[in-house]
Image (cartoon, rainbow, N blue to C red; front, side, top):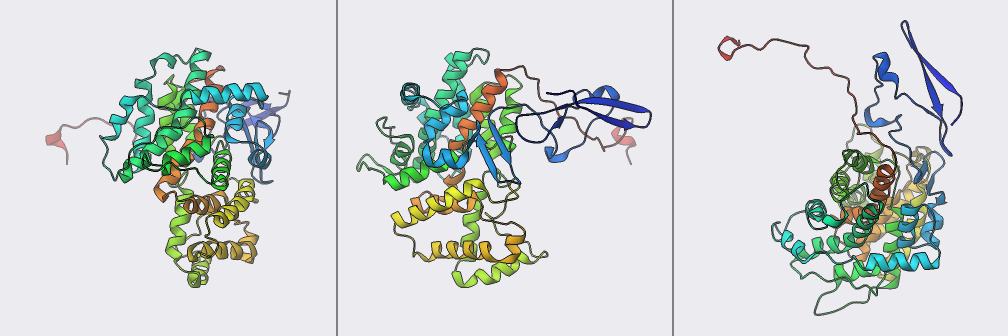
Length: 428
């Protein structure tokens, strides 16, 4: 914070505002007092508005930088694991060995869900989208865990955070099992977080499985890369819901609902659907030309990013992981995945895409990787929600732990001015 000021003049009115400086990123003009002048700012999509102060995640889209609590995402993805990153996002520091062991122990204590929650699934159609089920079931957790709903109590907030992180893989796997008519698999606490999830997804009571370590590590990286992404649409939704004093379970449910939108969490699913639309490696040239045509509605999904105007730093990690998974499952020469790799090669070399910096992003590689692991397309966003739960929870906890205001955006009203009510028989 400094003494720098900004001025705004409109007609005879001149207002002065503080200019705030963070530890990284552009300076911010504090316009919270602008309302006193009779004016509001107008910023659709909040492209130039900082709605909160946060110490959790920093993004520099132009430089291709993503930091969790100051740590570069590539270092965390290659040297850490998801539960260690969860601890970091929640507590601000990496754990030492004893704290990490205790944290994992606490997560394992909460991996099971209440037995009555199983009954919720019977109320959904078998062909219901897994995200529809997840929104309902996660919100319903607040009906079962009354002992941790006092948001002003730090111990209650900590308990809710542990429960959400621990139970999300169990609920996500239950969504999948229900859709294919298989029995739910209980969590195995001797397994790692990602390993346990794959076991609950693909194991059955008839045949227990030991997930391939390559696939376990790949999924763990996917969780880390998607754990948080600053003030995106779903995180902002969680914060807005949380500002009303709502309990954490329904706030996270609101975040899941926002994530479900194809413009947000459905990007990797859209990228895979695009590959299916192209269909064959011989058709790539035709679709590349369509993508270049401004009058053609076809777009290459999984290339470029709204935030990153350079290479997506998560994609660098995910690219190598994608190749490792394809090798491990024997799909490097599969026609579908060869199509994906050829499309990647063209996009990295074609001047049209290079000049516009339309590089493959994390959604392109994560979609291919999840598909190779055997996870169906309609589960992609569920896995995104599973991973992002820690980010949502960390942001919710940060907000509730500090002074905050009820979120109440303003509007530019363009409707009718005041008019008189006319009785129905007098209306023309």
